[in-house]
Length: 192
Image 1 (tube, rainbow, N blue to C red):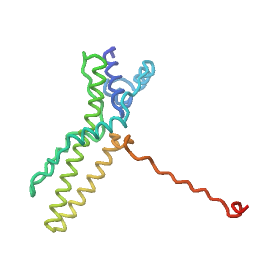
Image 2 (image 1 turned 90 degrees about the horizontal axis):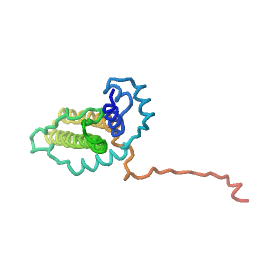
Image 3 (image 1 turned 90 degrees about the vertical axis):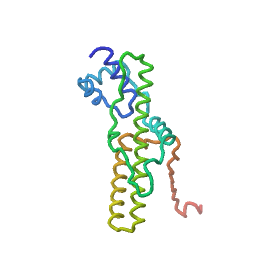
Image 4 (image 1 turned 180 degrees about the vertical axis):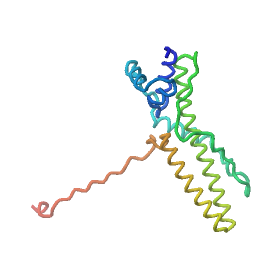
């Protein structure tokens, strides 16, 4: 590989929080060991953490999401299920672009792809909710069962995607975990 390809490989790995040496190796047709050696020699470091990427994606999704998936009453919602993969890939890096710009673009791509997943989840949730409400309104038991199965399947899929994309890594605005410690003393010791 030439120097430009190694630079692109580095930018891709550093800009994607979930990228592995194996993904970079597959993308460029080299061995994982070679990528690892080059990374160690050049001091590769992740420039975008999963937490930061998830927080930015949440913000983008919250500002861009619309309830367009709900549609008109009685109209079947339309959701494009093929827009994003279950597992994140490497961001694209344009050749001939200055390193700083390429890094910024790759980081923005990593955040943008996560935001797309968030927006799609919102649209799918709205579509499934509409399906459930329609089934409940019709009072058709079989339709309600199908809607329930669809919602449960969607929840499983969303959980898997959120884990793969690390969308719930540990948002900065999350409440800290509660820890309770109980110290037990015998009454005999307290009475002395």
